Image (cartoon, rainbow, N blue to C red; front, top):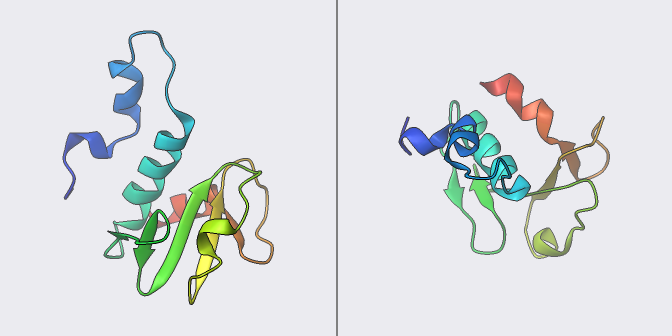
Length: 98
């Protein structure tokens, strides 16, 4: 794994002193781990990640498209979403890449 042992979101739970973890960090770690199995994932200048020329912004169900509005091709990757719609993709779907 190119990003070491912290590339596993489960480690956040063991490092947390109070059992509370940052949900945004957890989502982004999961997305990176899952997608990097089959694609070269890099940071994006305007959003969270870029792969194959596509910009991805990772967030919760209420995430708006502000970060991807200037992207040539961009998608919101959302937690707590059941199905894809428009430019929003549920984060769980990327787990199938792993």
